[in-house]
Length: 250
Image (cartoon, rainbow, N blue to C red):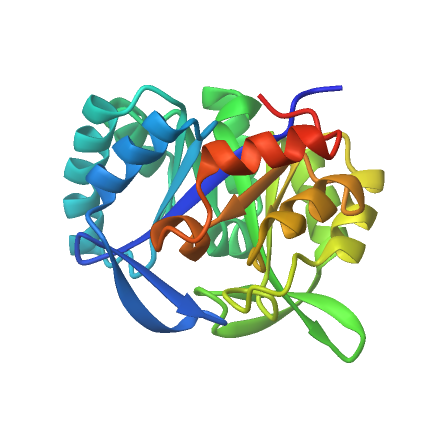
């Protein structure tokens, strides 16, 4: 069995790391390059950087940030936000990113997944899915959780894999920033259905939540933000705890 990964996520707005609750009420969490370097030192397995406002102008600024991150860390990192075409992927990979994450653009134009996989390889393409429970069904949302769609979580995850996605990053909007645990039931269903890694996102508040998402949710990786940004959980301590709980971590 592959070792489970711990992935700090840095949401970037106007060059600063921010964190909110249920996708709103953002607060400043620090310099994204310095934070990334610190997580690399602490033993994080990977990082995810998301340009959460991703205006056209912001994307150019973000490319410069990606170059700085690449120069300061020595672990793989994924970049997402405002990626709408192959030229965006190429620009960010050339700036030093290892993988890219597509979300809204892939729902609007699913062929984008095929194109990224064909041109750069499936290992580069992470499909991020923001979903919420609507009438007892998990529905996918666009534009940072602002616009509901007709797509169901499981259907879209399966289609994404079939089109060439290398990983699925599932964020439960109702769990995001609440710190009461991940959406393990939905994660377990995804893990059973898919043949590619599933990254859990939304809900980490204590060490036990990571254990539960690996053992109950069957996630391959766990992504978290505020518990790391504000020093509530140290990555080395978390990994030590998980090993004691018989979770295979790197």
